[in-house]
Length: 296
Image 1 (tube, rainbow, N blue to C red):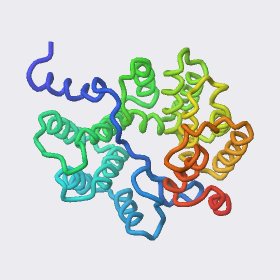
Image 2 (image 1 turned 180 degrees about the vertical axis):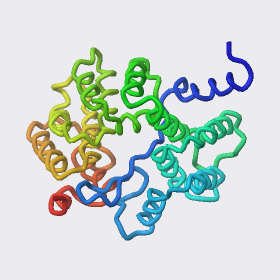
Image 3 (image 1 turned 90 degrees about the vertical axis):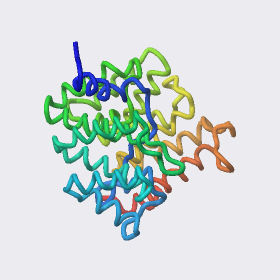
Image 4 (image 1 turned 90 degrees about the horizontal axis):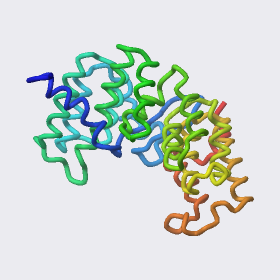
């Protein structure tokens, strides 16, 4: 039986697993000459801009104290919320064992509502980033295979959040192959959507062909048509020239089939395919045809 501090720690460590998926765990890539720029928290991010300078400073930072200061500034409204989320990513990448105490302290602050959140924010959105830090430390301690096995055991019940998904997208140990196989064999539509979403966090180029097929014909996988956007996200997150070309090809195939013709699938004044193009520009800063001219 756990007592005292051990019980508190166990409860805090389990908190994100019991709370259901949270909305914030950011995917950002900048400065990789072989892949598209990508950002979920900046509009049309491009190198040489103030936003890009800020992203670069955070992704190169090696001081965990400086990064936790950014998290504090974001949570107290004294700094950029986006920078605070990205700082959690960087802390996860650094795998400093001392970060675990900070993770527990932040979870306790959030549970006990010790800090009033800045306007239009929710401190619960920090939980996936905190979870990612914990899982990256687990990877260093027990290895990718153990982390993957534990994660896969929880997918069916939905006991994971976007921090788990972000880490699984970085795993070796055949993680991508496992997710693809489970997507193809999933017994229910909900599980297929779930595994497709998880695949969209991976940069494994082996998934390009599958994601192309899903975008072009989600109905052939018994998926909701809107799931095509998840395949699109996956292809631009992979971000190679081959992936960009595959998304353009899949759009052409989908347009020829009229699979997304229902106006209810559109957004604002754009149809589904037009909105997908708009999202790609927002996420990557360029049209796909521009990326084909730039990428090797």
